[in-house]
Image (cartoon, rainbow, N blue to C red; front, side, top):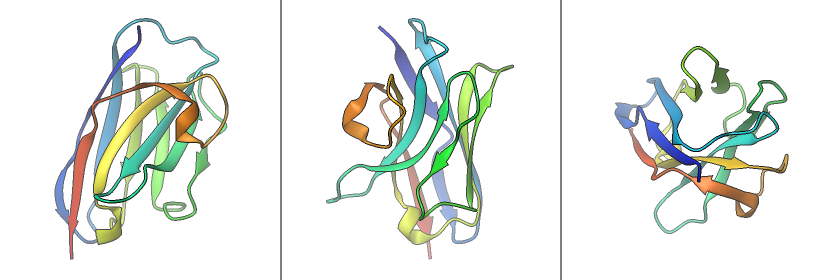
Length: 123
């Protein structure tokens, strides 16, 4: 069973940056896996943020974060990171890392999930 753990959340001001990191703490992630970042704000449905192939490349971004967020596969650390720049209050949410087998932005297809990390952006 793959277990994922996010880190790097926090409280920042509008325009600041944060870097989230997702590490797998147990199990095996196949090179064909898709790693995604999703977020969920209070009272809202979980939404797609970005994805990347575990072996690297083929990134997709939600329109709302395109040009501000960058997802990357950090081979030296064995993590998938999300660099978030120019943060806005509407980026406030719990951010989740997930692993899936299908190249899709649909969160329902992802199999393994981390516990989430809170990101709060003050105006």
